[in-house]
Amino acid sequence: MGIYAVDKLMKEARTLAAQYRKATGKPLGISSEIAEYDAARLLNLELCTDRSAGFDAIGAGEREGRRVQIKGRAIFDERKSGHRIGQLKCDKSWDSVVLVIMNSEYEPVEIYEASRDVIDEAMAASQSKRANRGAMTVAKFKVISELVWCVETGAITDEVRDSHGDE
Image (cartoon, rainbow, N blue to C red; front, side):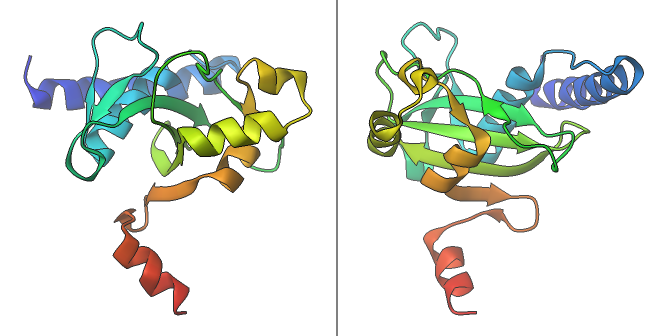
């Protein structure tokens, strides 16, 4: 199956997931697969077939060799707080986590990335019992991470960050 076929299938999966949620009020449960696909496509990552090592992809290009966990979250109502990301595999070997934020149509809007050191530090500082199990809110993840891609500008490089800092 060629790349075009996978792109077409993912587009149909997004549509189906969005329609299912509108019809039932419940998510279809495929946001993690969509997030992995989008992170790989947009951040130049190679998805792993065996996920037992604790990471979902290996970086290429500027992320060359980096072992990356990929998390996804569709946000249907931005006014609601307390959105959580999937449990982080803190007992496994990995280098960073990317969080793909999707809209109600399961389209990527933003992607954030945090290094292992930053996440370990945030978990250690947290008083939450959930943090001990690798749980974190989307809001907390955004605070400790860097925005690395957004729908308006695409990949955010150091050059783009520097130009926005001058405004």
